[in-house]
Image (tube, rainbow, N blue to C red):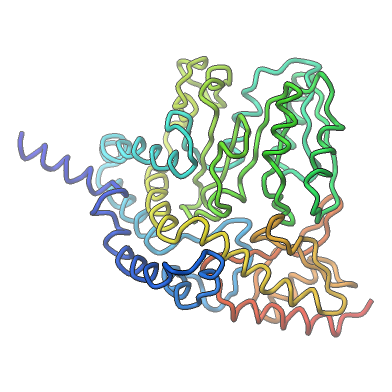
Amino acid sequence: MNGRREFLRSAATLAGAFGVNSLFERAHAAELRAAGERIAHLSAVEAAQNEDFWAVIQRSYSVNPEIVNLNNGGVSPSPIVVQEAVERYNQLTNQGPSYYMWGILDQGREPLRQRLAKLAGVKADEVAINRNSTEALNTIIYGLPLKAGDEVVGSLQDYPNMMQAWRQRAERDGIVYKQISFDFPIEDDDKIVAAYEKAMTPKTKVVHITHMVNWVGQLMPARKIADMAHAKGAEVIVDGAHSFGLIDFKVPELGCDYFGTSLHKFLSAPIGTGMMWIAEEKIAKVWPLTCNAEPHSGNIRKFETLGTRSFPLEQGIGEAINFHEAIGSKRKQERIGYLKNYWAERAARIPRVKLSTSLDLRYSCAICGVSVAGMTPHALATALFDRYRIHTIGIVYENISCVRVTPHVYTRVGDLDRLVDGLGEIAAVVKG
């Protein structure tokens, strides 16, 4: 019996990402702490330009040197330590799936919930762990007890999966889904807030906000919109898919009632991991998206009845948090914002090149849209890849037409020089 208890204790330690035996502590902690100590005297803005520090971070990733990946707005690679953690948990699982999944790895969910809550600045009992922003926000959208005639205000520049969910609710339940439209970039918070306010009526029950617009990276004044909406009696949902793990903030600072994010973007957690937050007093009224024995419970865990899912991916989130915190939220935001402006400021001076994103870091950070007169976004993205092995994504959507460029902490300045040179050469020969 003592031997069995010792075995269980050691197995539980193996599954944990938050102790002295975590892979991060073994593989990276000492090097990153030493690198951090060398720039401790610098402000976050100054540290953003210290290439020696960021070289340590860059070595922590396993990205293909043959491709310059500047499409981190879709999904980001995980650091090596996160990849190794997932592989380790997967190997453990396959030694006896039903035992190790539910007997060992499942015990790591509550510690993980605590750490995610701390990172988000909320209570652990308000955090549900799921697979992505779509699952998190669709759970809220479909779960809110709205009735025919209730109004929801969103934007045409919101993420399609959220818009489609609202449109389905309108078709199924008779709610009224209103959408406003913006011509980005906008460097005026009051203009944005006024657009939402103008669309609201006494029947408006929900305002849906995308914190960072995925198409062009516009950072929306979520708190100001939320305060206005609450004053008019509406609840607020924030889509934080592209802001969480990138912008240095805590969820309560947004003033919203509901929040969803993908952890596989700027947090660099395993691909297929996400988080949902609902204010404690509102959990009971939201129906779970999948079945639960107690759908009206105030327990956030009712939203995690997903059946069999990837326990290794879920537990890998812990190592991503370790890595993120070793860098520092503010330092990370400043670095990625610096990288975006590093290339964008130079590109903006190239004839025929146009930006669709503000260079003011109060209104943007990582994502920036760029276009070349006379070229479609698809043609520009194709030329960047075929000629320079730079991977981006062309976007033609509503009133947005550009190539989205998104660096990350592992991106090298030299790669961005390559991008700018490529844009200049392409723009110089294009006809139109």
